[in-house]
Length: 252
Image (cartoon, rainbow, N blue to C red; front, side, top):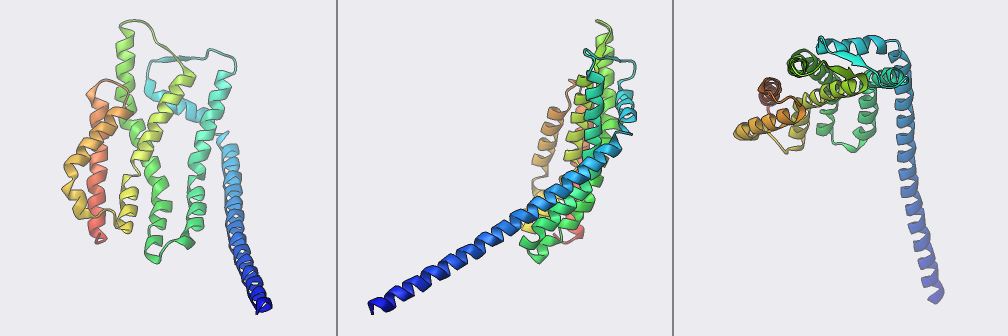
């Protein structure tokens, strides 16, 4: 009997060890898959960066355009070069974003339910489109009045010679914030698949949504005038009600 118990314990231990090895191998396989996808994403970003080097100078001129009569200066020899590479990197991220989202969706898809997988396609396709739309909205409607205010106010005191690096960082951050804000329909659409929100719930809290839009607009628009804030607030509110309409169309 003692020998039998010993053999059973030995077999049990072997089975547990085998099961643990299988789980460990599964984790390793997932990590290996993740590493492969990250490497491919980095390669695509690198290729996009090389392509963006041809566009960076024109992109810097485009970013300078809303400033109007404000002149730019560099306080060091390497600053124009650093700004050039910084803008090229931003362009590369935008160009590679669809592929990065595609790789991320393929990685998480096996762990999602069939109903939840339906939200991956709108994220992969709609995310980059809405980001570019938000950045374009900021460039055309938010930056001009904001920069005009700063330029006209400063001209009454002293000529403005804006440092190029600070200006590009400011403009890029505003374009980034608006691009992210325009992801609101995607976020609400994805949350509807999880059951956390519905069109009816969003309608009930529309007053709080308007207040949140005003708060976000006040944070991401640095000028003290109400013009830029109202423009951003109006855009966010419109996106919120557009999201409600889309959810109703899809019966959510």
